[in-house]
Length: 254
Image (cartoon, rainbow, N blue to C red):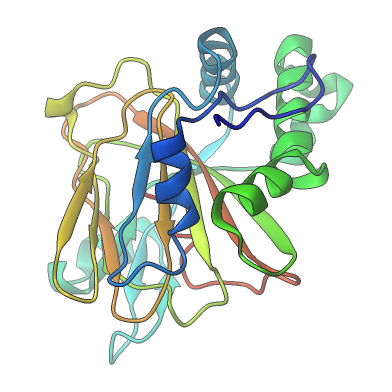
């Protein structure tokens, strides 16, 4: 039977999934070796377009370059000048991250009211309300209460995420919702995943698709360089882990 979700009909709601997709999701945390899942059409089309406009209209984005510390066991944020001076093999990641998101809800923020309303729906759906946690619990059966942590990212020309593992964190899996309707395969920005047996999977950030990626020892992931001049590959990245979710080295944006 195809699963249906019972959220507030006025808010965001995930589209129905097929039995095969549900079976793949149900094996996400237990399957050996690991295998990520990519799903098309996560939201109803009109909701996805409106959410895309809402995220792209966020006024403040900041480049967040990250380099490896000695030994490559951890990373640190650096300035643009430090990034430029760092050898390529020590550059871990660079992309734009939305800043001051809570301030967008202020009446004087200049962020349109219709966007504030949809952004509030997203926070309720993904973090504050039970909808997404109930959906993820039904999908992947983690066997423990989940807490979610959300980040908004976009990629500029040349931005990328270097190969890494988040296995040192308590993150169980990461869900990435891609919101760039102008994305084309030649644009780059593809999420790569390699499991314990060396199998590799490529997940292009197609509009309104989601990648759901397990985080475990022996697995790594990365994002290939963004090839076009315009900022794109707008992504809502949601890390799911047990209560409480600790701070992680990367959120696994991909």
